[in-house]
Length: 384
Image: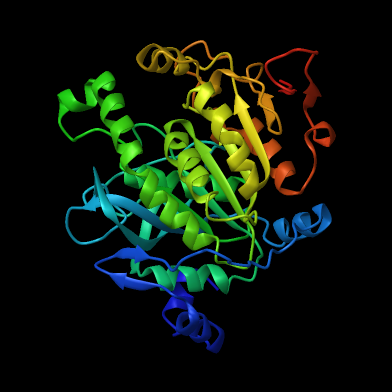
């Protein structure tokens, strides 16, 4: 049964017990959590590859689907909550808003694409992505949905630079659909994007600078979200893109000061727009909370060039060897004649590898992966 339908049928006894025992209080949409010191979390072991594949093929995903995307955001709410850029803007706030967006994903869509149609009337469901429904939630309601899911893992997706709210939830639905992901998915959306004015949208350098400040302001709210997720008795898959690393990596590093039990099953880092030195410094803390960390990078990622010029520091997205991290160079499959070559994380080659990663396979055993030569800046190459 879809999440939005189950929410309307009341809380079961298990959910009631969760709500009664959870030490959360909701004040004006802001999450407050109890002290974590001494916390013991029961971890669910990763599923075997056979079990994961079995669940993936339970649903053929051969038809148009209504995909439920849970969201958490520290974007300023401009009016009544909705799955819309008109509701959630590009200004950061310290409080968190929670909800669910039901999104139509068309069966004919091209993998990696988000096809949009007419804004008026009733677009054909088999051709276009479309927002079907929205439901505002509390932190406790979101937790209860995640806790009572029939599948063991929860996937959290964190977008990068210049992504508005509606694109964030649509992209989350696209990735979940193309991966045939069976568990609940959460879009952790920080206030990226530009204003609505033509000049604001055209000035990418200014947008980058503003987004960078917004990312820094989102570290503490993101840490609250991950602290909340760490209380679940199931592992978490975290997928991050681009500037989202400036939110997620410091947030997890801060949380590592409080927690000693790894609650992240897979940490998947795509085109990390974070400087190499900072990542090297924080990597040991990250590994405390993550069973495995994978970086997809590319020497063809042209977005890393202006980012490096602005920050005056090399970026992880251009590849750098890090101890204890599976660094995979996607440069051979990401060689665009035009464009930045920065959005490869939602493409067929990356999703194919991520699907094998979620099955628990080590890189050397996965299709289309080869080892790099000695002394390279990565461990593996994704073959074209």
